[in-house]
Image (cartoon, rainbow, N blue to C red; front, side, top):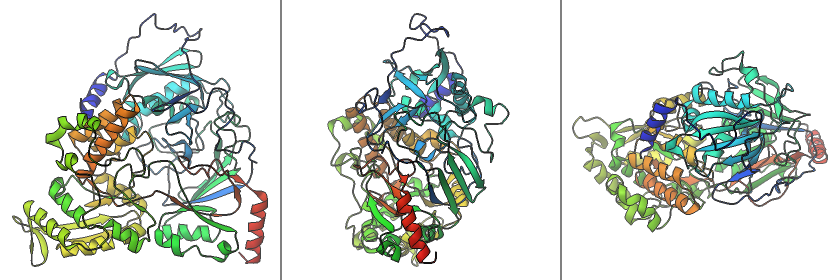
Length: 632
């Protein structure tokens, strides 16, 4: 069944009441439900940490508390409401990712040394019904809001209502899989799952990962509107001070209710986390060198290799290191095409534009091998397709044969032929043939439509000048095809508006999947998301074959089924040339002032400098003494 059909069913019946078997459980509010709750939930693997574990292995449980970490961000902000359809949300109140959320607690917390495991945070127990028709949670009695009031089942019900009725489509659409939230015992809530989605093993993650909101706080406020009023939370930090659009400080809550929970012990060690916003990325880069910021993840190869050879680094007070993570590295700012335009709906045009781009040459000649060359949407992971389709994949692909490119079955996807040369004459000639077959030809050195005479021009919109600069070699090759390409890098808010509204020919966005990218696939590639104003399907992709393969990913009940579906989807996306894979961020270039302590570990899902590093007062004093000697 297509995803859009499933969505229609959910919307049609979402207001109906789901009947429960009367003898299934005793649902009297005065008694426990009898549900066999577990301390965590794992998908595609077993839980690493057993009941009663004391802390995650990758933290220092005795880490000292104190100090400040200052981080830089590009752009501005004007909103504390992360689920709103408008505004740019400030860092620290992220919706889906707890790592970027300091104020709100969630029902479950991820373990960064496991690919797909969650453990109880607000919830002391979680249980997913064997039939996949509901998931239940039991709240911890000690959970408290920052004003001292308890977190209750009413807060869970309220949050559920807000996210279904007042949230942006990227939130409300994934929530449409749930039909109802029910109180089934003291501190217990069960979320009923619509028949069309029953059995999806990722749904406990989805409902367990969202911020829980305080009903009493929002009783006098409109949760559908943006706000610059610091919200009430239950998490490890609260807002200390801010200037709208410029900076914000979060202070650690000294009596945070969950500080000694196994999922939190050794974390949230800084007294203050500060984010400074910079209009330009180059200024943000200079801020860390001049000690305005403490740490930065560098994303521009030229700066990584040339800009950090400073006296402070030579003296040992400024660190630079490429660190690995265990998440799939995905695609780093691939170019995609605006499929609202008829010319880009033609796969021959998309292939021709792919043929004449050489990311391998750019990565070596311009970026000095800073990135790895991407061959998959799930690069650097087991989810990346390789070779020819397996028997399991063919079971999914054969029914779609008439809807997908033939090369899905016969060729392994890779860079354009001759990649690494910078300019490949054979690729240019092949691209001209494809344009000709699609109704375009070169007249007087200009690519024009054979019928209308309209020139084929491209407006490429980049998020930053650094990204736009990296496209200049591509622009020069396009000129050999008679295509004039302009490159613009507007202010971030304007860039975001243009991507959402379709005011571009070619755009770019990173695709950084986690180990269970179900919601991400729906929000980025599904036909349903294409029709939603605030989704991340910016190319406006509407492909029934892609929809069916996303559904196959969602219904996978074991690792074998999951990998087969992901591999099949990967192949179909790649050979359709909706995106042009370039490079992949397989390592993270980190630079920081040596004021912090951290535990050396194997690569984790992410680098935990926000919540697992700590302030080292001796190191910090040494850095300050060095800066004093240099007059800074």
